[in-house]
Amino acid sequence: MMILVTGATGSIGRPLVRRLRQQNQPFRALVRTPERGRDLDCEVVVGDFDDPASIETALAGIEQVFLCSPGAEPTPGQQPMIAQQTTVIDAAVRAGVRRIVKISVLGARPGGLLAEGAHAEIEARLEASGLDWTIVRPSGFMQNFLTGAGAFTSGGDLIGAYGQGRVSYIDCVDIAACAAVLLGDDLGNRQRFVLTGPEALTHTEIADTLSEAVGRTISYIDRPPAEFADNLTAQGLPASFAADVASLYEGVANGSAAEITSVVGDLTGRSATTFADFLARERELLRQWPPQHYR
Ligand SMILES: NC(=O)c1ccc[n+]([C@@H]2O[C@H](COP(=O)([O-])OP(=O)(O)OC[C@H]3O[C@@H](n4cnc5c(N)ncnc54)[C@H](OP(=O)(O)O)[C@@H]3O)[C@@H](O)[C@H]2O)c1
Image (cartoon, rainbow, N blue to C red; front, top):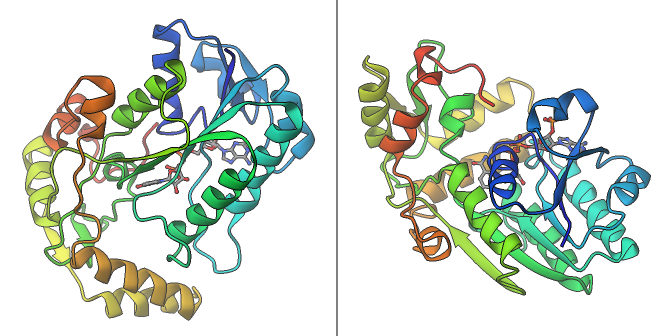
């Protein structure tokens, strides 16, 4: 049962590759260049979502695909994720692939803002493809706080417009563990799984936990969503995009990202990782603060 892992060098892909290796699962990893795949320590195939022929070649002999590509672009009307993932779905149909396990996002819905709307569109295409499918909808990644995508000031404080809204951030290693079970045990056909961390934290609580882990005070600076939108337009981003970002912040402040599910435990038999345990595991990366890069 050969699997193709796309996004293999990403935050979910790397731990998934490790899991599949441990499970002795036959798989190959899609990478953009041979150099990118060198440290994955597995069979790799070179391909690019923007080059359909390379994807079709990569799919030869593949039964299941793990589908994960970079998140929605912040520019309205430019959502490469939709075109790129549709390329994989269409090529999979042509190549005789049986099933796709796709990473989506918590809150995906038709007409939803940014990634929520883009993933809903791809989910619909996957459902209509005739392939077997499983959709995984994770909450925000804990890893964002190591890449800088969690939004920090240059001084290393956390900044956002979440108010006291709670977010059930999840560790990508847990997402990968669930994906490995779904792929390896061939579970969850035509099902959606909402994956979250074990707790929903305010950004003040997140800053407190970061402070303990890093060994210095990290504050959470809360700003009104409209001020964030103004900053984005001042940086030259389109007003409609800035308005969508502000609406997403308002939604989170009102509890849209606070859902907690037991799916990680149900699938893996292990409790989902807490934010404090995640930071303890990644303590080497916390030596540099504010975070610059994570892989
Ligand atoms: N971040 C969050 O909090 C969050 C929450 C829920 C859902 N999600 C979803 O999770 C998914 C992954 O998000 P991410 O941004 O965090 O991804 P990521 O970890 O940065 O991984 C992206 C992967 O795609 C590969 N890739 C990029 N462009 C490619 C191309 N043209 N052809 C082939 N491979 C390509 C990258 O390879 P290289 O190493 O070569 O760049 C990398 O392996 C997105 O769909 C996002 O919407 C994210």
